[in-house]
Image (tube, rainbow, N blue to C red; front, side, top):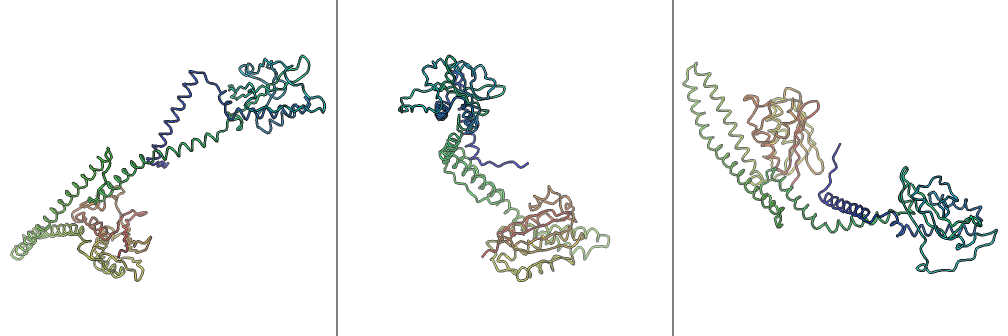
Length: 485
């Protein structure tokens, strides 16, 4: 399963909000333990106003309706709100509704000490009740309300004492409206989550804006450090990271710059020494080959076998020195060789004629394809790749060279049907002096610089080179070259 990549800014903001949420939960738990808070606090806000409004509407409609029709009124309100509604007397007994059992804690809340004679009489027949005198909202006394939660099963109970009575004579009782819900929101009547959702979204947006300068600066610094590290890994030791920050990230940037500078000096010195040593080896090798030629002319037949072995070793040493010199020169190609317009079909045919040695080569090159690049570098890169393919996969089938265009790049693919390499050796194919296990023999393998030279030549042309295994077998080398002016 793929892991979700979350940016550092998102992680910081997430943990900040998680910390705020944890503090809020701990604060509520503390207040509840210290002050024994109940759900009645929900009735002090918009939820209480909605319940109050529903109770007033129900009361007005019941006063305008005969008592024997109150059941239908209650059912209609239950259907419109999605809640279970019931009316209870001030003695805690149910008068109307479908609730079968009331928890003891709810029954205690239902007891109302008001006198039924203080309430307006129920309507009789078609007589309409007298309209109540309008009273300013601020002067209206609040009706007793409650809200609590019961378990097994979980239910949320909200109640409000009505200015309404039921029955006649001694049995006339003040009524309490009870609303029962399976959720805390009560269909939006008890608690409306949307304001809280908008509040959380606003808090998230505000927190993002407040934290943007700090976290943005940190992420930018880390991103620059990451890019610099990648450049150093690719051998670009001239890269430097801005280090204006006066914190640990600034110190890290300074350390990365110092590391890049030291690595650059070390690698440059190593390459210079390698190049100098290779140059110095050319003269003694040439003198030894001349001396060996003299010995071969004056030697006896018994010495011929030994002289041939010495000649083979000298030739191997000469090729190695030549490749080391080519590897060293490949780095300076962009400054020493001009870019020219190259006829790709002609260049590839020349490379095939020089390197194929009679091997079957399948070409798929668009006629007239041209590219502006370093001709010497591209010639050497194509030659080294084709030479490797002929050496290790020539007996396994035809080798294919294909040229195509993709996203403004010229792609040159060289594929073979040989045994390829192991998967763990694939990432190291272009490292200097690295040879896969199958190519470590003196006679079957080279110096390990061929593909390293290919990489330097392609990079000198401004492109990239990659290798991939083919199915069921074989190796594919792809050179991606830009058409630079």
